[in-house]
Amino acid sequence: MSQSKTAVLLVNLGSPDEPTPGAVRRYLKEFLSDRRVVEGDGPMRLVWLAVLNGIILTFRPKKVAKLYASIWDEDSPLRLILNRQVAALNLKLQQQYPDSGLQVFSAMTYGNPGLTPRLQELTDAGYERIFVIPLYPQYSATTTAPIYDQINRFQLSRRNIPDIRIVRDYHDHPRYIEALAESVRSFRADKPAVDKLVLSYHGIPKEYADKGDPYPQQCHRTSELLAEALNLKDGEWLTTFQSRFGPKEWLQPYTDKTLESFPEQGIKKLEVICPAFAADCLETLEEIAEENREVFTEAGGEQYQYIPALNDNEPMIQLLLTLIQQQAGDWLGNRA
Image (cartoon, rainbow, N blue to C red):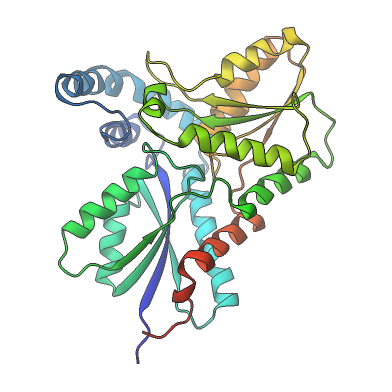
């Protein structure tokens, strides 16, 4: 009997195609038009679209394009790292399950390679089973849920739908926590001691959490487990939230405001890690590693170190393999 074709799909948020105002404008329009990202119906929706198209997409792309240009290297870091993650996971699957026929592919919720076109491409190529891993350790309706939305719309458009499984989150998975802990230990191996480890997560509007988004609870749980794995005492670590946008209140404490207040409290040596990011991108390489370094040092900070995301290092790839084994193990080499 023939073996069913099975694909693994690694999905991250997205990136513009190039660091230019036009490409950034196209990307931001797609991203910020998603009702999951900016909620609101009726008049609120109309007001938001007017602001988005009349103000944000007029003035913001030029500034953001410059930021992307400062970290661009042949392609965006997010897409380059995603491609490396795909290649590393493909190699590991071939080594451990040479007869499984599993192939790993990349996709983005926004931008290219788009998730919906990728699903179309895979099903047209005869893939009957697709295991989707959103590269968001913590679930949020603003990040993971849009992947479910696109998959649902894709399935509604087809009569013969593939078998699709989705990893909802892995915020407390032992391999994820150990991967984070190992990255901190390795980073610290040849570095001087610091006063505090800051765990900075991408924020969401507070009202989203008040409506039931589990994201903040999962972030705090990740922090607690990581602090436990590193044997950190209370006061040696802190959870904060970055990247707020617009006038609404977002999850607190805010990363930049917290860093600004530290030196006057005698906290002048910091390490910062971003556990919500599976790959380094604009928000880590520019906002955290550069902008917030300036905030901290200008306030009197003396030592600021950013610990890179897990990216395509071995513990990250092993985590992805384990998720496949645990949630799609029956697809590893089984005959249809």
